[in-house]
Amino acid sequence: MCIQSDVFTSTTHLSHLLNTEIGLAKQLDIYLKEEYERLDQIEKFVNVIKDEIRQAQGNEEYYFGNPVNSYLFIKHLATDWNNIEKLLPTDFVKNMGSKWLFPTFEDYTGSAIGLMRLQDTYELNTSQLANGELSSKFKSKRLSALECYDLGRVAYTNGDFYHTLMWMQEALDHLDTETNHTSINKIDILDHLAYATSQQGNVEHALAITKEILTIAPDHFRAQNNKVYYETIIKNRTLTNKQRRDAIDKSNSTNLKLIQTTSSDESYKINNKRSDDYFDEQESYEHLCRQNGTRLHPTYQSKLFCRYRHNNHPYLILQPVKEEQLLHQPAILFYHDIISDSDIEKIKSLALPKLQRAVVRDFTTDTFQPVDYRIFSYFSAWLRNEDSPVIARLSRLIEAITNLSMITAEDLQIANYGVGGHYEPHFDFSRRREKDPLSRLSAGNRIATWLTYMSDVEEGGATVFPLAGGHLKPKKGGAAFWYNLYASGEGDYNTRHAACPVLIGNKWVANKWIHERGQEFRRPCSLNPM
Image (cartoon, rainbow, N blue to C red; front, side, top):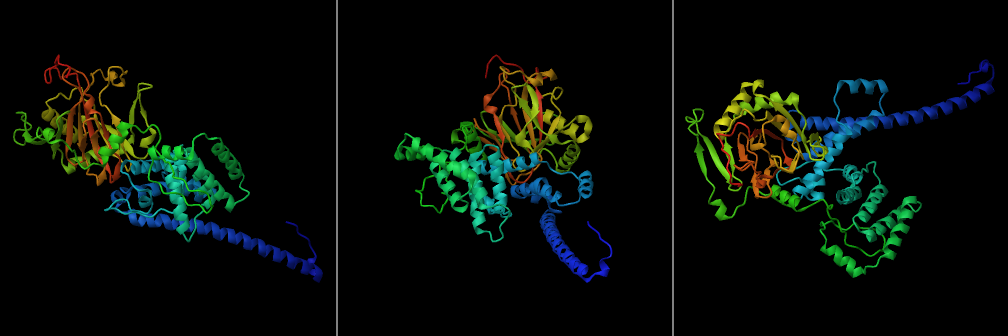
């Protein structure tokens, strides 16, 4: 700042100082405008989270049981907060960061992928999902154009152009109907759409979208280059238009609506198929997840039964358990009312402080590893009999019902599946050709699985058996049991099973894996391989 003395002696100098004051006022106006804009952004963010608090507080399980609510909540704290952080004083941000736990960007992308997984598994229409029409029973907040765009960006970053197309198209539709436009613009959406649609084999339509970009922004450098690139590809093609259309018609395409452009180009049908790693078992698994219960041929249905079981065991004689057979091959048994609500709450309270990202077996390293697709959706903890009389009592009950020794059984695994939480098709036993990370237990293979359901699930979350066609809907207090191995010790491949994604609600289960050692006289071996 330049300061001069004796200005009070000259009227001319005072006139010059008036110009200084005018300039100062203009600069302060600019500063105030920027501050008002900054404070306005902060206020909008505060209003969003206050509205979220109002809806969720005191009703957390129901509110976060909605996948759209969960996704937006994680997004607000993982990404939107980062943008607000830049508008706040450094000391203020540092103080807040030391006090509270924030989700990571990895949590955010995991929740977005989980939402898209639900979309695929339960065949949710993109427009209905974006408009909050999750199901006939449950409604949620309508997503903005920016929120649809962000979902498309997650898919785009992961090379998932199948979902990129869906969500960028939805972002475009929402942008056209929004009066209060968000920070996303039409060119950004079209730019992603053009590339994604070209990667899905729709070069003609990618060209049409690129021309649309150039009508809005003639100097768009990337669009100019892409236009030449797409035109060259089309020119060099050897297939006729008819052959190309026939190939698209025969492909595994979704019913994606055509992106409308203002150019006069010919309209082309969009081919938007899932990636090549989508295989028959995945299709069967997803089909079973959408099913309501197990559907069996009457011949097989006639072999199933319900009964009271006590095994002449002192623990059960006065109060036999209710046993229902759900499948014949493999024999899947379901026991009703095995555990009380109070015991369930005790187990959950013991597990909560210990919950961490679940691990699964990695066949490339023969170790147990955490996996990315369970981020923010599947956590587990292990509880020993010594941790509580409730755990020990459940172990004794399992032994009495199954007539199998618990000496070499694993500790009780408590698993919590959040929205989108799932477990892809797998075996519980180790196959002969695999190195076995369970061998360190010196207890043999997993002869049987006991699965206790500790919550009801509003929609989704079933346990399914793709090869056998079985579908078990979670029922609080109930438990499923099956043998993973034949009496010969060979694995029963029909026990391959999966946990379907949780669509609405929250899923708690307790797994008990029982091993071969100690069962020699309880389940004698047989020379029969089956």
